Amino acid sequence: MSELPGIVVTGASGRMGQMLIRTVLESDKARLVACIERPGHDWIGRDVGTAMGGAEVGVTVTDDALEAFARAQAVIDFTAPAATVEFAKLAAQARAVHVIGTTGLAPEDIEKIGKAARHAPIIRAGNMSLGVNLLVGLTRQVAAALDADFDIEIVEAHHRHKVDAPSGTALMLGAAAAEGRGVDLDSVSDRGRDGITGARARGHIGFSAVRGGDVVGEHEVIFYGAGERIALRHMATDRALFARGALKAALWGQDQAPGEYDMMDVLGL
Image (tube, rainbow, N blue to C red; front, side, top):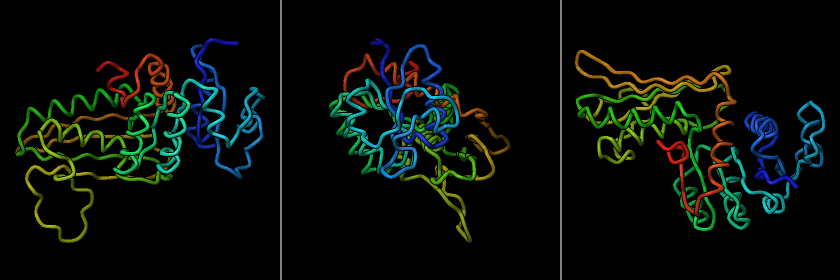
């Protein structure tokens, strides 16, 4: 039997799920042991390779997550909040690393995930790319260097099918800016402006979301001052970079104790 870490991919039929599957299959550092879909999905019982329109790969899509997780060393999960919370419990039972790229998690979801992390490593990030995580670090540094006379706006754009806003990455950036300033993001966050809103509050962090076409992901943090502005920007053009980052996290997690981690930990930033 191969000694390479076994990986399970959830949400197999989704665009990100299929990208993750291809990334694991092409890797010489991991092996695909199972793919998960929701009960009743028409991929259940099919070889995931043929379901994706290619050749057989010897891995059958299943809806039995617990059995699949028991055969794996890591689970990579870009699904939906409710599913991710359940997968966190099952991955903890299997003592498998759980890499979470799911966005739109509510505070109560994050609390439940934190409880699961007592039993296995959980690596959760709104974005798995190196560039974005560098952007997070830069945002924190710039926010710490500038006072509240500089207004902060975070503008993000994604494809028309994205269901949550602001994006998980935008919220990561907002949290970094708030941390840099030593404030609580929830208390200074402006997430929508419509109608007569009044003047902007000093020190608030604004978010704007654009949805359209097939945009993979674009994020810009703008610091507006009197007579000047500073803009930090990242553009993703290939969804594969998120899959590569997620696999890197899954492999890194093999050597970690139970607990909560993020991509800054994985990348050593």
